[in-house]
Amino acid sequence: MPGYENDVKTILSQNGCYFLRHGKGDNDVWFSPITELSITVDHKIVSRHTANGIMKRAGIKWHF
Image (tube, rainbow, N blue to C red):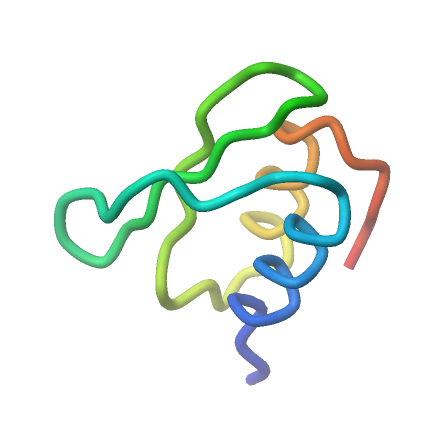
């Protein structure tokens, strides 16, 4: 099963989102200037639904 974490981080960066800090456990916190919200991104994203949820919270129209 493919991991989506690299694709998610690449797409976030391409759309102006940026890394804020490391969170607890396996999470990183990113900021989206589109929605002005902080987004939690896991290091191991195995579900496309989770990846799509991150994109939605960031305000990016992208579907895996």
